[in-house]
Image (tube, rainbow, N blue to C red):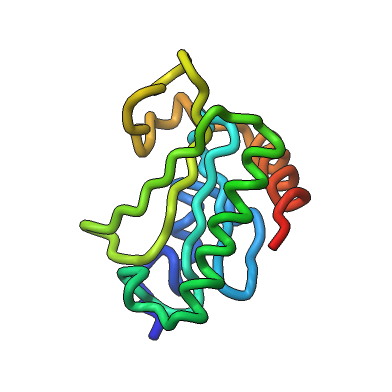
Length: 143
């Protein structure tokens, strides 16, 4: 069941508060974050149902979702060549299954620590930059 007060379910306009939908797969919504402090930062959100935990998915849906996460991470690696991709799967307050994918570079901003969720509007990319990141990730997204 989808929840109408969940930004990842029916209220997709709420996604516009923090990102732009880049594209969708059968299983996931792929979102480019407005805060591009880490260029190529993306989010992969489960879209078939309101699910809070990856353990709540069927084995088939879990594989499909993780394949989307891996394909997105590989696209980030191909396009932006980070030293690491950090993965964040939080849900204490939101409660909808999603993974943050954040490219990180040795000796650069936040290397060796966790990434901040949102540094604020001063760090938002322009619509043109967001469209470019979305296009690049979509072109390199291979399942």
